[in-house]
Image (cartoon, rainbow, N blue to C red):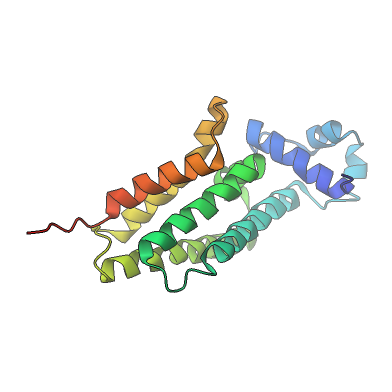
Length: 196
């Protein structure tokens, strides 16, 4: 498959940003890895931050698209089914984009305004999709939790921890990871109905 020089630059930067961090990476290093002169790199990309912006916002779009695909046929499903599908969708984006998702999750803070505010707005919008299902589940008596912010923090921490498995070099199938993490999350908030 032939990719554009711009795509090659971004993919190379993803790997370097993941390994060294955004702040410790220079344009010269990216250009060297791509195999071009630094001046030539600017023919394809405006700045180092433009690369970071592209990675972060394209990944945000990937998470939203994966959510939409996961929920499209589940409008009338119970909250537990919806949440399980959303968890799998989120993890699948990470699983299929190890380098880019690592940058998305850890390096976004280096965005400058107005990109930083725009990114935070998108992140909040995405979190609200999960909040909606959690609230629906609690209203229907399916979920039980005290603080929705803490619950969201727990859910996203669990989903995003998939990176630790990848770093460890352990090979685990997407279906196995998403099923295990999804089950652990849902069991932690699922309301137990006792039969008397």
